[in-house]
Image (cartoon, rainbow, N blue to C red):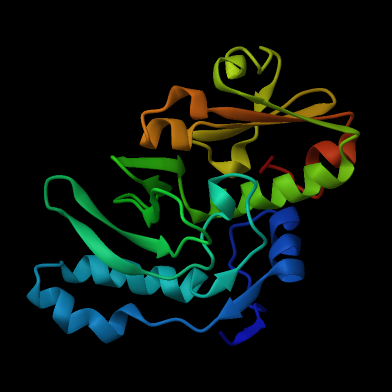
Length: 223
């Protein structure tokens, strides 16, 4: 696989996430959805769905980032494939191949959500930007936290105190981040929902953070 620097960072990210992509992202060569347009049209895929796939590729196509802590690292790189759906349920498409053998795929949902698809589609974040923000925040928090604690299963219940606020930039759905006075908490329920396995829930607590550790370059009005 040929890799090049990913020097065209998409807009709409916090300063922290832009720095993460600039510092750690590279671009892989990918096959383009446009090359398959006619075949997919003949199989009933609406042109608007292929247009969405093309727009996704223009923004994110080929981006390789460091692995996520969960989902066995996440997509190896962003690339579209396999549009599926219907007029009643909406259309989704593959967001990138798995890094390892996990029992689900990564997909972009009908409304642009980034999620996983096993027994059903479970949106993790409201968009790809949210996934990238979560990767950047995990990278940042793991560097600055004095302690990192992981809990799983039923122990996740009640792990987030009432006074914690949601970290809005990750656009969390099944996976959320929370910010307290000196801690960040990442709660991941995507695998548990997609695989109907409640014990698959997990939370990672990054504690002992100062103001920089809590925010790390988030611009005013975003975090």
